[in-house]
Length: 516
Image (cartoon, rainbow, N blue to C red; front, side):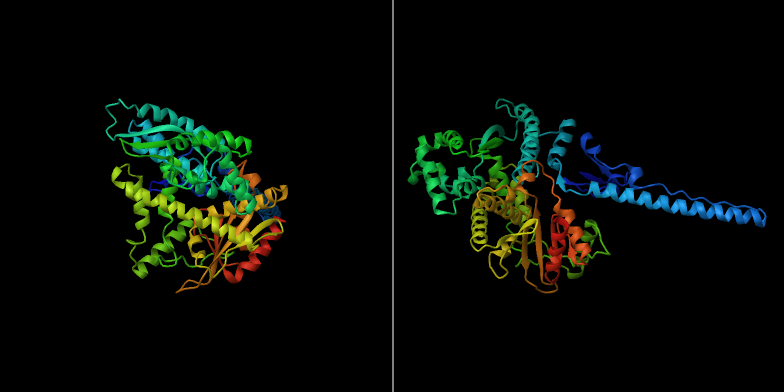
């Protein structure tokens, strides 16, 4: 997280890493808020910004002495040039190592809550925002399970402190508690069968897209003693004995069927006597509302292609370009930001927002089906291939569903599902577990926006399970630069890049040669 201290109204809060070195050492305008462990990973100032040593000698010596001095100056100049070259090589090496991987730090909401706690200004609303941010990081594989549990254990103390039901200071009538959450998609708000069927871990373990996989899923339900008639109706409408014991049975039989990570610690929130919501379901609903916009029908202006290998600009310049485009076109953002403000309303802990939250839950279920169907289509049509040192998949250009995946967050979820499904389809071979994935989504040309494609990269499963670092962002940038491809970084995440369609072939050729 870092703040622009130049003007009181300008603030930036980001958990993307690495932080740009100019923001780290711009102490007059930027304040970087990080923990001590992360601060130790910053490169040294002297390595990034070496001091310039300018020597100027003025002499009134004789001609012979001047000649001798000129020779000495020439030698010194050559030595200084060699030193500058060596210093620059060290600088580039340090920068390359520092920016080699992109990853995520603790969510900004968590940091802001800790600050509010230090100032004795904490509330359940702020605590719930921190919980949702941490949950979102975990669900999107931005942090590992160990890091998630560590931060969650810290939040537990705040939950117990702020959520005594007899506490008269709890004016919000909101109560948060710690729970053990099943790693199933929206099972409280869906049918148990559909929740199992569309959850990534269950779907990939049983390979439910095959006939044998569906039979295995039915066997799993039968072993638990849950009839199909019960599992295919809304979870809250199941008979009490099944609804009460379903969680215990799933955890018990998951071990028999060798299903890993079937549960994890989490939180839930209740509004007085109203219905309670799990942090996982709440987070998925918020993401679904936020991602509901349709880019094809939107008037949102796209950033012009201004990145080439010899003119690399920063994300801040992209933001300025977007602001200029808006001013020139005089566009209104009231309709386009509707999903953003709806999500913001859902963050406000208020029972009046229940209907909006329920809409988000229904959208989340629709998105789960959309992702599963698209992944199944890619696998059935053999659109996912091993191309040299990585896996490659491309969505069909003229499909009506393709436009839904122009949203980077939905595309990332599809990529994650595809990566694990492809690994399961190939009988969990070690080779596929060590291959990264690049997915290409084509864009139709319209108005002043050229025909292009969005590419997103995911690291191998072996890295996802042990680290949250992604090396494909730097690889994308270098491949685009080496091939003179016209590209644009339209997202804060460097692993998402947009290039012109005509440059796609040479871009991937360069990427293959780099990663091979």
